[in-house]
Structures are given as C-alpha cells and as structure tokens.
Image (tube, helix red, strand yellow):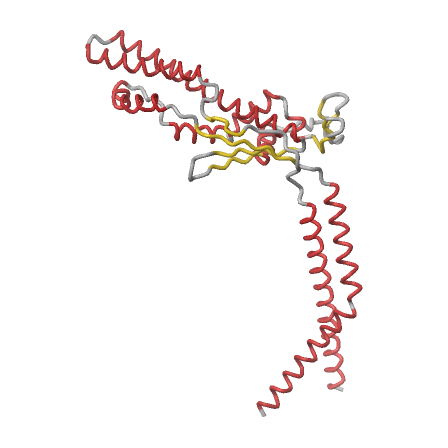
Amino acid sequence: MNQVLQKTDLANEEMDLRELFSAFWEGKWIILIITVSCIVGGAIYALKLPNEYQASALLAPAQNEDGSRISGQLSGLASLAGVTLGGGDANKTTIAKEVMLSRAFLGDFIARHEIAVPLMAAESWNSGAGEWIYDRALYSAERNEWLLDENGESLAPSTWDLVKAFREQLTVSENKDNGMITVALTSLSPNAAATWLRWLLEDINEHMRAQDISDAESSVAYLEEKLEETSIAGMQQVFYQLIEQETRTIMLANAQREYVFKVIDPPLAPQEKAGPKRGLIILLAGMLGLMLATIIIFFRVVLKTGRTTSNQQELSGE
C-alpha cells in the first residue's frame, strides 16, 4: 500500500513539474518581453546618469621627532604647572582626520571656497565647454541665485545639507600596516574633484597649524604670567623650559607648510570615470525583469491549478 502511495506521489510530482515547465514554455514571450523591457529601461536610466570622477591623494603623517621627544620629557613638569603639551604625531593625525569630517570645518570650507552651488545644484559637467550644467528647478545660472519654492521660500540648502552632501563624496581610509592615509573625493567634474581635494588638504593643514599656534601662544602667555609670580629658582627653570617648548612649537608650525599631513601623491584630475557602473545597472535590471516574469508565470500556474482543483471538487460533490 505504501509503495502504491509513493508511486502516486511521484507521478503527481512529475505531473506538477511537467505542468510548470509547460507553463514557462507557454509564457516564454511574457518572460522575454518583461526581461527585455527591464533591460531597456535600465539602459535608458543608466545612460541618463551623469559621469562621476574620483580624485585621490596619498598622505603620510607629518613627523616631528625632536618636538615629540622634548614634549615627552616635559609632560610631567607641564602637568604640575597646569599646562598640557601637545600629544604625539599619531594623536594629532587622528584628531586631524576627525576635524576634516566635522560639521564645523566642512561648513566653513564650503562657504570659504564657494562650492555650495556646484555641490548641490549641478546636474552634470560639460567637459567641452568646461562648465557646470545646473538643475533649472533649483538654481538660476543667469541670475546667480537659488530659486523659490511654491511657498516663496528659498531652495538654498542649509549648512547641514551641504556638509551631508560633501561627506557622501569624501572617503578617508588608513592603511593599518604602514599608517598611510588615502583621501578620495568624488565629483561630477574631474577638475572639481582634484581642486576641491587639494583645497581640503591645504585647509586642514592650515587649520591644525593655526590651532596649535594659538594654543601655544596662550600657553606662553600663561607661563610668562606664572613666571612673574614665582621667585623659586627651580620653578622658574621649569617655566623657562616649558616656554622654550611652546616657542619651539610655534616656530615649527610656522615653518612647516604640510603640518599634519605630508602629501606623498597629490590629487590630479582623473582621466577615467569612476561611475556609474552602467553595465552592472543593466545586468541588475535584466535579472530583476527575469525574476518578475518568473513570479508572474508561477502565480499563473498556482491560480490555474487552484481553479482546476476547485472544479474537480465541485464535480466530485455533484
């Protein structure tokens, strides 16, 4: 009895598979039409996407061995005097990377170099004319102003929107083996990608240098004030050494152009596009169309089988 049931089940499974394959064969035109339509749609979408270009720079942490050595020797004395000397180069590099991605720094950077319009309103880059093509629904290139929405409010992006958009185009990665840092920036224009990245590296070096100079000058002023208040020779010697250290920091900062990051490989305008991956987009569209057509055929088989079963049950009941 069990063998008979197993043979019956096997026969039913064979019939189901046969019906399924038959349904797919009958619906081959549906599969072909849907798949080709998705491929064509994906191709049209991919071709409408503007080219993107990525400029990159290879950086190394700037070293200051002498300053680090003296800082280590005097760190204990400085803590007694109420002054905190700068940390090592690794710590300074880590801080610089975080500052470079911070909202305050990027907001000032975008405003200082006036890149808000090409960052947010540009649709593409006209390489022949060497100019931006702007979204006419957002920005008027003729009047050089952002347009108004239906409520009469300006469509100009906020500082947060600008920073968010710039962060999406900026990547910072570090090689843990040798400490080298790669900074890459993506833009619709190859020239803008290289220029903006060069400005960014110059500004972060200048920002960190100016901040260290300001901190050192404040420390010198504080130490000189404390020096006048004490008459103990030992403490005076400590203060002189600390003032010498802070003065050295100011001198080195003024002398070093690449203060935190030393550019090993500078950014250049890329010759080849980094995106979009049009072939991959078309391939994914074709796979999506094939899956959609398969699901449609499968549900047609299920509905047809359900109706057949229902009709058989009605006939059996009669």
